[in-house]
Amino acid sequence: MTVHPSLQTSIDAWTHSIEAISELVTPLVESDWNRATECPGWSVRDIVSHIIGIECEMLGDPRPIHTLPRDLYHVTDEFSRYIEVQVDVRRCHTSPEMTAELEYTLIRRARQLRNETRDPQTPIRWPLGSSTEQTLERALKVRAFDVWVHEQDLRRALGAPGNLDSAGAQLTRDFLLRALPKVVANDAGAPPGSAVVFDVHGPLEFMRTVRVDAEGKGTIDGSVSLGPTVTLVLDWETYLRLACGRVRPDAVRDQLKIEGDRPLAEAILREFAVTP
Image (cartoon, rainbow, N blue to C red; front, side):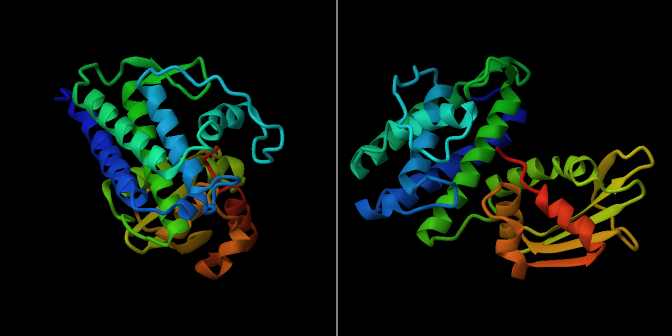
């Protein structure tokens, strides 16, 4: 049993999402595994391969020895090349092979997490091609975030919506909101004294205000701003797709409502994607 309650929220969110993915893909016919997703160059099979691969690395399994083809247009840097190895090595796998490996990986990881007794601040090597370390607490939170976001990628590709208000959704909301002050103040260059309101509706509703102080530093809170510089109104799924780089603002223009300083709003939307 996990001894540190601070890890349990991430473990619960991860468990719910990865079990949902398993239930989602187990009955798929072979052709469904080849459906395109909003992740450039990736099919349903590729997303599931990515999840299996990273969870195997979290288990300490050796990485596959595999040479990537040279014609993968979406592989543009060392990070994407590192990620792609676990994906490309499984592109020839059949649907029964995919579901069996996913189920086996899920069982092994769930057992590992149930037996986790390390302190949340224990430094661990992050598997994504980096020699840097991060805390166990941070690593588990990132895994829960990544798995839930990919669950939603699969649901959109397969036309099977759901879990937009799950534990993984709430963890992802908080994960993405932490990036907003930098997006508004630094990346979009909102001037000192600005207040930008994000009014999000749908299965997960929230309102947040990013304020830029006299030194140009951004902060975020849940209070209502009177006379904000910009107000962006959008639904939760559109917020998610924009923040995770699944779509560009022009593709969801009819699902966005902008009030106030439009040039600043457009600058914020251009910088909105915060995931690699």
